[in-house]
Length: 173
Image (cartoon, rainbow, N blue to C red; front, side, top):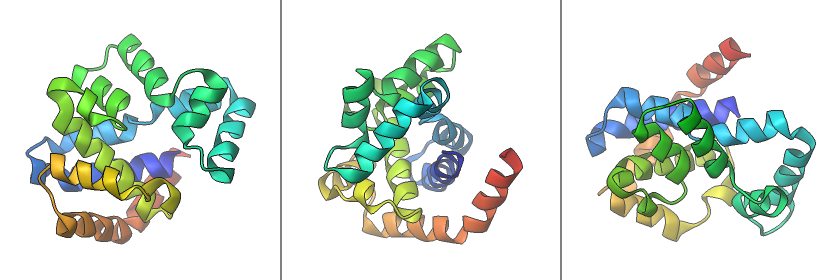
């Protein structure tokens, strides 16, 4: 969880200047984007293991597995928690819509940034099944007016940041 969150935050910060977003806000949103997964893991550990197994062992996406087992997704749970914590609207939107930025209204670009950073983190950490949807990647790049070069630069940046990410994870655990 933390390695992916920190990688997402790192990618979001790297891409933020290219889409005219605050680097600090992008980093924080990247850290928080999957907070619903942490809630699932802490509150329903054995059931969440089933979600992870379903996601690995079938064509079912992790979101579909969450909805099947819990009747809601980590994005929805994260949104509820973020609202309860009274987080700024930008962070709530990133948590709620990083998988569907088009539904984010005024925060569409920021949510697309976090969605793209999420994909970059999965790619850099070796989760090809999650990254595999080229249409989704293209839509995010288009929304942000970025191209393949910026995507490749972001992946390279994450590769180069592996030791820093690992140190950050080590400090947390």
